Length: 145
Image (cartoon, rainbow, N blue to C red; front, side):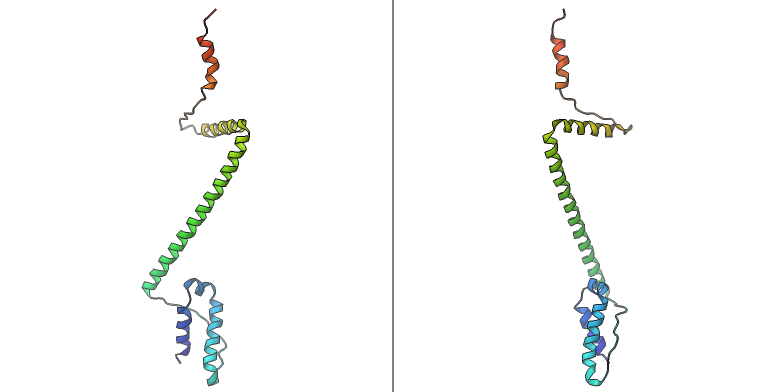
């Protein structure tokens, strides 16, 4: 009897590999229903149909592997873009908070310098605001008494 084999090929041919792997019980039930309907006129009752092994031709395996890899890449890019979007939102919020309190920006700057200073293998060069030296420059240009 070729009816179950033909039906199996037809049903599996209409399904994607992900569906075959994840919804095998649904496909089994669908196959059972179709085969049972086709064999009912002969007095044959199909009670169980189970997909155990599916063999795919080599070119189809390569094509499906390429499709799966492209889908993984797509998902990774979406996750990365979502992370970048969330990070940019947090940076906007942080900038708004720092803009309200100028001293907070200075504290953040000093905290960053402290974090960098823990690395003894690195040379740290950081800018110093010229306003810091203006008090000393003014005294140097005054005549001595």
